[in-house]
Image (cartoon, each protein chain N blue to C red):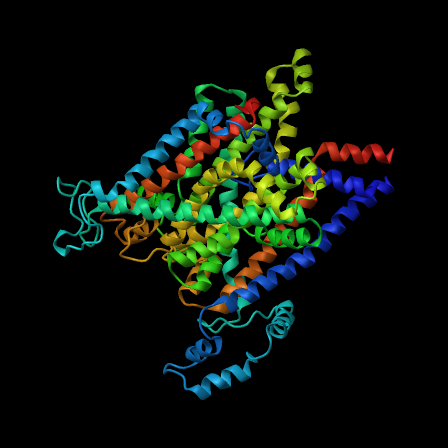
Length: 323
Length: 313
């Protein structure tokens, strides 16, 4: 037991350590993004500071104050040092600290992403399981068609279709904003339907794969009712890939939220990013990349750690070596 | 012991992640090596699948319409006629007009050219970069491979849309920024596939033979590796074009891509937003067009997936 436990700990430790260079890479990417911006940074910042076009002296003063003449690596290290203490600079637009702006807007995004995730699971699992069990039937065909269409509709169009039907025609739900009750439903539905299509396909193929294995034939040969074969034998194994991919799907939901928030005027970090882009608010865009990069790194880590706990093959391997 | 354990975990993890869904994850090395073995007559086999045939038919139709736009469009797509704002469909304007009195049908037809061409251009660029960098990583190995793959890992750590959006945002609006933003992220997934393909070819006898008689690495890659994988990569990138179309039109929808008055499906959606209550057709048609094109690519991909694993059909 001791030995196997060590192996597991070591696996997690290596994963953790590998995050450090990844995070440094993310920070480099974010920093260089700000430097890709067309135009002279000192001029841009000086223009932000005053309403009238800045004089050459003012631009020179900004350049001196912010040490913009230092070599790039020096500036990166200085920026990184501050970033690691949570100081990502101030937004050009609101003059608030970038990190606190991100922290204020993140819960709204998390809210619709989580709700969308639940919607996706609730739709996808029954649909995928039914399609696999009744393979080739009209139900399977229908599920396949629904999944194909679900994956093909751009969510920036689906959102408006849902508004047309549920908000304008039926009047059941608010069109936009976050204040009124039920406001989260349409954005979450917009996000969740696409993810449901992907997950349903995966659930179906994963269950079909398990159902084609020998131990299922054995279970059937024993005369077990089909329901028992599927529920207590096949489903357990078939869910593993779905759970693993769920981590990725959740990441995609957080990413997709950027466009969906724009449709519904939902005050999350996606809308914050787009507003910052329109306003050329570079510190905010940089901060967004660092922040989301960190979030996704953590999600990936969680998936990596949870996965071996789920897969019986690996658990058994551990258990066998322990004895 | 610990190492083999780690490998086992990694292997199982990769296998699971890469199986199943082309939409949820990047093109897998498993898929790539399957494609490699199916090289001969791949397109023919694909066409035996009914789903793939329907997908291809949709795409060919859309491309023909795009090509023929100047011949069949009833009007110039950019001509503004204030007196005809939001006109209902008529013989002169089969789908009616938009908020500036421009012919919707003409804009849709010309929009197909911009939308499909930009997805195609992005796809081609991504393929060129991915094939080159992936072949270098796979064939050179060592620290070059290590460095390239760390950059690839970094880019794939984000949902691709977000990074493309941030890069486009920093560069400023316009179709060129969008293409740079999308290509500078998307090459990573192709590089990963190309590297896997190169690695599996590297140890084949004919390549070893070429190496043994002293053929230079560059020549081996150009004359032996690339010709052997190009068919697979082209098929893969055809399918990937659907996703590129969604992203590029999405960025135009956000107002970052194609600028008015150029007709493009995503930008047309953006124009129509303000008229959702009064003239929903302004949003319906371009959205339908994007969906149809993406559906075509997805059907093609679905056919491929069935061929990939007939057990799951």
